[in-house]
Image 1 (cartoon, rainbow, N blue to C red):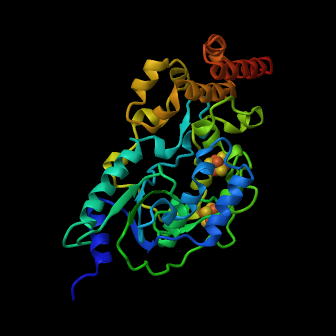
Image 2 (cartoon, rainbow, N blue to C red; image 1 turned 180 degrees about the vertical axis):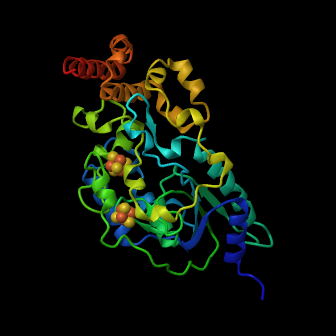
Image 3 (tube, helix red, strand yellow; image 1 turned 90 degrees about the vertical axis):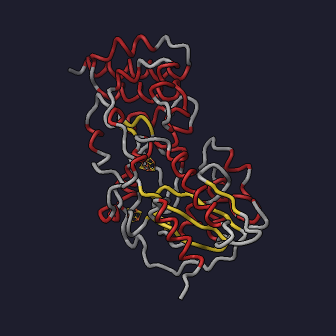
Length: 353
Ligand code: SF4
Ligand code: SF4
C-alpha cells in the first residue's frame, strides 16, 4: 500500500532533523482566541504592542492567509545536556536561557522549514498549484495552540508546549499550506494536578494556571522590555541575564527528553557560565562581535549590560564595586540606572560584612 501524503511529509521532516511533526486544520478553537484577547485586554503583554496590532490574524490563520487549509506544525528539541539551573548559585557568573546559549534557532529552523516546504510543493507530493508559507516566531501566528491542535503536545500551565517525548524543550515552526491534510489523531497527555512550574517562578508571574503576566516575567523583562527594569523584580532576577528557564526546567516531563541531537543547537562553551565582569565591560562593538550569530545580539549592548549590572548588584561581591561605579557614568540612561542600583546593593553588602 502506498504511503499517505501525511506520512511522506512526516518521513521527510524526520529525515531533515525535525523531532516532532503534526497536522491540523487551519483554524483555532474559540478558547485559544479568547485566551489571546484576555491576555491583551488585561495588558499582560506589557510593551509588546505587536501582539495587539495583528490580533485578528494571530487568532485566525485564514485572516492572515485566506487560502490556507492546513497547518504543518514542527518541533525541534533543544533539551540541554546539563541542568540549566546549575549556574543560578554562582553569583559572579551569568545565567543565560538555554535557547540563547547556541546559534540563533530562527536561522536553523527557518532553513529546515524551507527544505520541507520545497518537498511539500513537489509535483509528486502536493502537486499542481500547492502553495506554502513558512513561519518561525516572526509572523502573527499562534504557534503553541496550533502545535497542540497538531498533537505535538499540550499547552502546559506555564503556557508553553509540553511534549510527552521532549518535555518543555521544543522550538516550534509552522508551514501553512493550501493542501487539505488529514489532522493528526489525538494523543493523550495533560498537566493533571501538577503545579511545579507555577511554584518555581521567582517573580510570581502566573496569576493563575495557563495564564502568564509577561510584565512580571524575567524572560520578558530581560529581553523585550526596553526601559529600566522595575526595582521590585531586580533581586528576584538573581544572575539571570538573558531570559529565564525556571518554569520550563521544573516540568517533570523533561525527564523523558533526550539531549538535543542537533549540532547547530549545541551550546557555546563561553555562554555556559560567562563572567559578569567581562560582560559588563563590553562596548557596542565588543558586544556585537561577541554575540555574532546569537539571538542575544538583537537586544543590543545597553539592554544586555543593564541586565548584567543587576546580576552584579545581586552578586554581593564588593570586588565589583569599581566597575559598577564606573558604569554609573555610562552614556545610556538604562545602563547608568542599573549601575547606580548595583552600586547601592554592593555598598550595603559591604557594610553588612
Ligand atoms: S520564565 Fe521565569 S520569570 Fe518567566 S514565568 Fe517562567 S519562571 Fe517565571
Ligand atoms: S510543570 Fe507540571 S503543571 Fe507545569 S507544564 Fe509541566 S506538567 Fe504542566
